[in-house]
Image 1 (cartoon, rainbow, N blue to C red):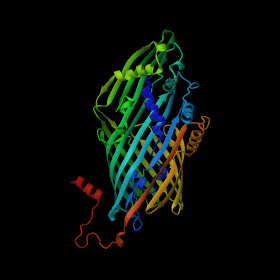
Image 2 (image 1 turned 90 degrees about the vertical axis):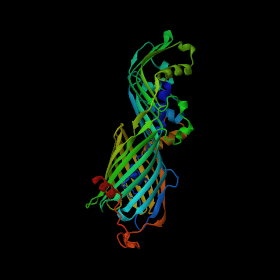
Image 3 (image 1 turned 60 degrees about the horizontal axis):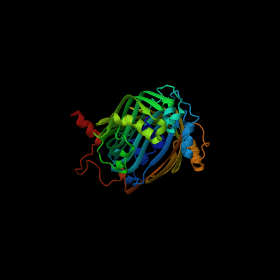
Image 4 (image 1 turned 45 degrees about the vertical axis):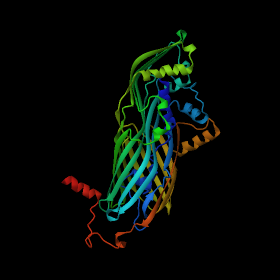
Length: 472
């Protein structure tokens, strides 16, 4: 069933989806990562931090995978040993497996403390992002093994009704944050996007019939494939270079509020935008039943090519628009001495998925440790851990969004043992650092000049100037 296309999607679901970038334990840490992802957050401390902050091209990166369903033992065997064996995978019912992906690599992050008035900070960033989700049937995996897994002369209906997408792009951003007053802060991030790759597949109806006595396969498909590529060979190394042939824009807005009673509240609308994929992109509307004859005289490769030709023959090249994976975040937190609990709700706006997280952070001097249970709306439960060392001018963090599954995955890979691990498949690891340099940013009382004195113009601030412009 369109074997190459399914292979691409399952590859993204099981390998590329190995990265996810929420890292809720980093929220409200005032780290460089936190300030980029949540634009109203402060990254600098007056009279302590230096004026500039950067990761100095040392990427903040993450690795996180999740796959759940009947096929989880098949995927575990494939991951740990490299062998695909669907012999015990139930087929004929169209049962769905689910996998998700969110990737965010900070290639370069540079931030400036630009004004003590309203604590204004300006940031610049280059990120590499990828989002993906797959709901695929057991049969879509089993057909990789062999069409002979299916009973002869038995019609199968709707067993390949898959729904999946993957989108990756470069993101170049500029952000501004300011205090509105002593308790309220505002932040905004505007981004220029350069699409790398996109593909989506939605099969509404499907049909499969193996008439082996007559040496024939019948395959029926009704659905749509859209992508920046349709053949795997269209993806090359140079595809990763940002060329802006697939341009886009996105916007992130955020706010924080510190209440008199000690609660800290944060809200964001993140990465609300779109990408226009160029006129050489592909759209294949599938509505056909095709037959493949003379199976016994053909190699698996030849059969695979004839199946894949169903999509190739329906291909139409044209431009299209896709939304970015925008999210809405909400955080509420309060500090009790060395203990800081946080409740976070994060929901995708256009695509399936979201999280509920409870971050438990314990601070001792410059060190902190976090334990974070997370419930993902795709029915995954994860336990994350994180350690951080942070001073006013240096920070380093290391963590996992799913520590138990990560340990099992590492053991299974190192031992090449499919029996290691139980339950759904997952693994996670992330790390990063930030360094501040330059002169120390001073509190207003320590400055040699004051705004409005000696003819100096009083600084109004970015958001006050923006609101004044709108009023006019």
